[in-house]
Length: 154
Image (cartoon, rainbow, N blue to C red):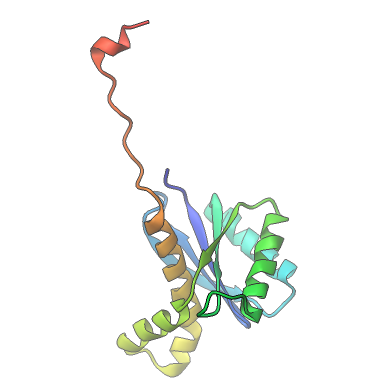
């Protein structure tokens, strides 16, 4: 089943945010939210966005180290995810290794200035996290048609 989802890239200063379309197929960037406060404050801001967008799940990027171990950034993302769960939001964690680097490359290729890349990187990273999560979900299947003969069977 496809769901409307919010993608989150938790950074030191800013939190990148993306949202899926109503069919749960395409991720699009949203404005960032301030991220340098207590995880509860960040979760409050994200909960407002989730309510505005009518999302069913929040996908939080988990910035694991290259070898798959937790880092300081990983702990921060887990704290924000826990704070979101405490606000009765469904949360899924998604491995986001190299997403910020991929976002930077995408913005460089688009010819963005250094200043503009800094402000857009978090949003693009959140979009990449969410799109990866959406793409990994099984496609919604149409209901199996009911055979007319079977419909009359007891």
